[in-house]
Image 1 (cartoon, rainbow, N blue to C red):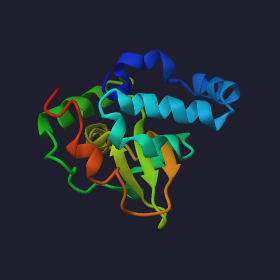
Image 2 (cartoon, rainbow, N blue to C red):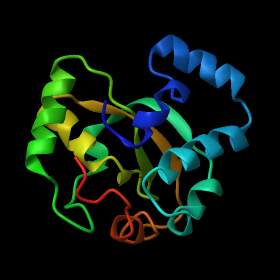
Image 3 (cartoon, rainbow, N blue to C red):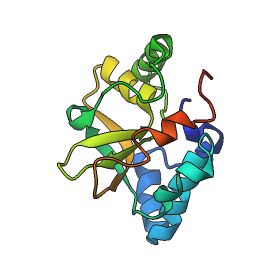
Image 4 (cartoon, rainbow, N blue to C red):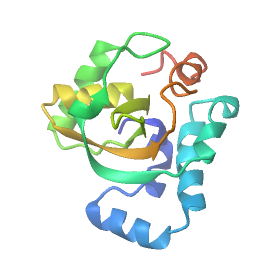
Length: 157
């Protein structure tokens, strides 16, 4: 299993049935926002993720990869071996935690967390990725550089 919520996987819905049940139980946006915030808190200092509490998140089963901006990860290059391992795990049918995306005003998506997983889906020839998504009113925000400079697990595999 890959991603920030690897240690909290029991809290993240995995199957379509679990997602449906999760949505029924968590109609309050505050609960969902807290879930995403806690997901991010595993690897980012609280000082750079406060914004995640202030916007509404939705779990989307299928975000088209061609709409996700795949620019170089701020704060460091992607580890290609890690991307290859993730792509192979995806091909093998292993569960991947949702990535965290922000939807920009132009309708495209920017990766807040999950660069390696997103690229792994692309390398596994998938057309879409499961993601926590929130609309943001501006292109530039802490999801651009601040989070990635301060990430707590930089260099971990």
